[in-house]
View 1 (cartoon, rainbow, N blue to C red):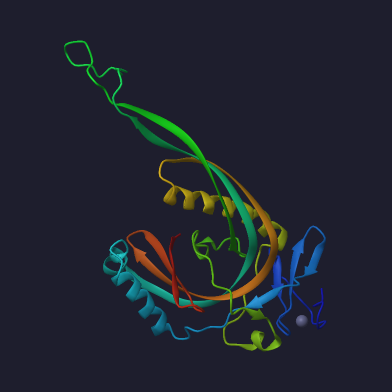
View 2 (view 1 turned 30 degrees about the vertical axis):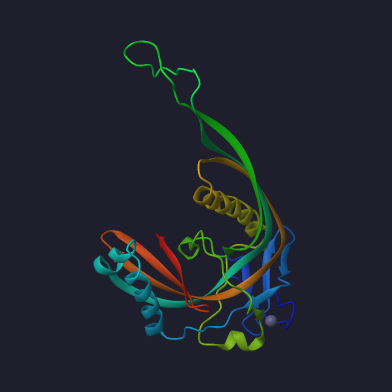
Length: 261
Ligand SMILES: [Zn+2]
């Protein structure tokens, strides 16, 4: 197989389905039509360059978080590393129809609902009624799907990247000190995966924001999709038997939340 841009040989390893040409940065993706060129491939520059900086950002985050403090106090930092990870970004619109319940208090009246006193005849009673309402939410998201299947620790469920500074990938990007990683998931598979993840993401959002949330139907429409190589620091902590990853977006200097392996 040859690079569709520069003709250099491409040698995908077994299982790979998304390969970056090490000469020019063009990428190809494996789908039902075989290998095809990825037309939209971008990169985010590394702003957090040093390991010390990454650990400082992590420490600041853990110090300020009561919920996460145990990580810092009771865990051992085993490894800090920077990778250029490939993410398929779903440029998606979605709409949710959801149900939630609320309690309505009907004051007074003579409707005794089994609350009558010992005397047998209920006095003025308060009648609480549960009412099921429905609502809708329409929104857009640029949702990331990691292109490497066995690296779910790099997929924090509720983090979206800020992509305003993304730029097309070029020849200079493949000669940097941090290698651009290949992936095992082609674009078509990522699209299916992305739909499911966006549905789950919207349901978690509704669970947090809608009081009395019961259920939702989410439909997702992926308008566009592109590949972005994104620099991510991962700090690997050992806490008893558990390995916990704290991820830092090395372009935006933000903590992407913890994930567990
Ligand atoms: Zn090439």
